[in-house]
Image (cartoon, rainbow over all chains, first blue to last red; front, side):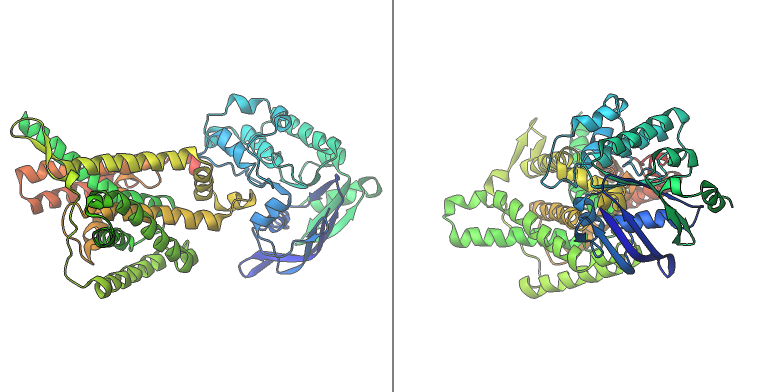
Length: 231
Length: 301
């Protein structure tokens, strides 16, 4: 579904990604692990088109999307739950949700019921401002917003980081649910090895801006992963 | 009693004019953070659009239709100023986002160019616009208090523009996109909102409202190429005092300045009154640098 070949990108003068290659098959969950600062979030920002691809190619399905900006990528089917959630703070919960329909081609005005059913707390908070929600509630809102347009590929950047344990469970269930439904490919950046083990179809390990190990999880020695994660 | 009514009405009238010239700036400066020094010239463009519309009505329309020219002029001023604002955003301002000093200088330069172009087309002397007859005269409340229709009309016009802006920003899909882009540009882009189009449209709307202000100013006196420079300082004062980013702040800012200005002018002279108002604003901004209505900082994080 998503294919990266030798992607290079970064901020300003500095290069962060130095040739990342990756393949994400349809309806599979691909986990991306690595220490802080190795370029996982930069890769996410590059995939959404917030950062330009300087070298390499990216394709989505059959389509070459290397030169597309974030607007076209979103309409092309890339959904994004960013690190820090990035809820619009001065917009109500309902408005935040409706913005999730923006990528829909053709346009849609009705928020899908089945997505809303995954997050029963959200309808109770329709008229509260996004900025007033707790971290966990914002994360649920960010998931619902990203799922509304039924993306082909969903990018999840540390979705359980800094969130109260009760909601972590719920979010992990949602990710399992997405996997079970089999309509969306997922790239998941995650620190919790335990959770990665339970959902990943395939694992990439990043270090210093490139992929240093990859494999189906059964075939790969988990201790090797731990090595890359310890400082 | 009569004195009080007159005071309040004058205060309201001054406030409404201030608000009208500041509303466009509340969009371009308040929402988009562009220090648009050419705002005054967009007002000037609105004023001259009214002048031209009036000329066209005199030349090509039956005489009995003349009085309706002003309604047409309101629309024409909005459209012409919005188009020029849209062009300005596309050609110049788009490339200067996040560089406030550069955009300040560049828009100031554009302002001077627009003034010269106006001098070139319409000549340096002021021109007068004939107000439609239905705005002459006034509403007599008592034998000695007459509220001029023109001033009442401007108050109503401001209320209408304000309502339209409120509905657009808070009730329409485009308005929702606009607020999303202003709050988090990157994320809005990642949701498939074309930030460029929203920027252009927002700037055009702010400029169009400046055009309407220019149209209304033709009711108050003759207009000239440098009419905008008289109003640009007031417009910035209103927006800064009101607090950047919220319409209600701009309304409060305009009311505050308008009311105090009238009050001080009654007991001192026009120039001393203005000095007092500005002194008060400076003192107030020392105390509350974010203005009357500040966005809560926590939710901006």
